[in-house]
Image 1: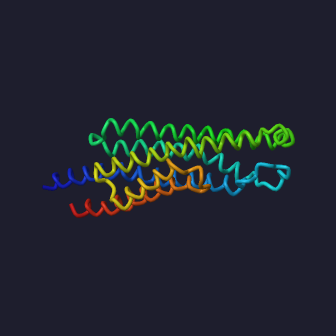
Image 2: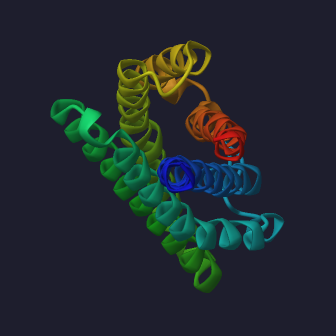
Image 3: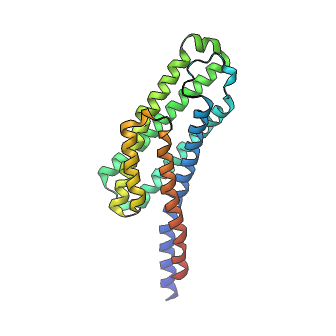
Length: 227
């Protein structure tokens, strides 16, 4: 009997490891991405296309935001991996392909936008007059806006839709998380470029999802003790 109980405890512990890892990675990604986006937004306002007074802008927060980007990407990749591992045999190949593809595309576009932003900061730090008079700053800002608000955020919307769909099909998330995910995803797909702060909907939804998984997982520990 004791041996049977030990086997049950081991199985339960194994099942708890993956969702816990997914939750922690998702929370870490959400915090890092939100922090980097907020730092960039508050450091360079929307209408700041003319940088005649470059000294008035805070470069330190932007540099910090750029340093957070790689770690946010690592956490996001980990989140994708552990979610797929959690689904296991229940994962549909069609949705798995879109899930993985949209996640990687979002991350790649996010990295490209961050690289362009970093290059702009370096250019302004070394030759601000040249950057401003040549139009390089304005062009860089336009490229970043196009990448983030038109392409990256659309991939984030697709990722949210696929994640919510798989969660519904496998019953791993409640409707109060999946249904808002659908609504926010369609808003991102259709009108993200009209709202300046709307891009934060993606990391905040991942944060809510991950927090729920973590709380549910920690509550599952009681099953081990009661087995």
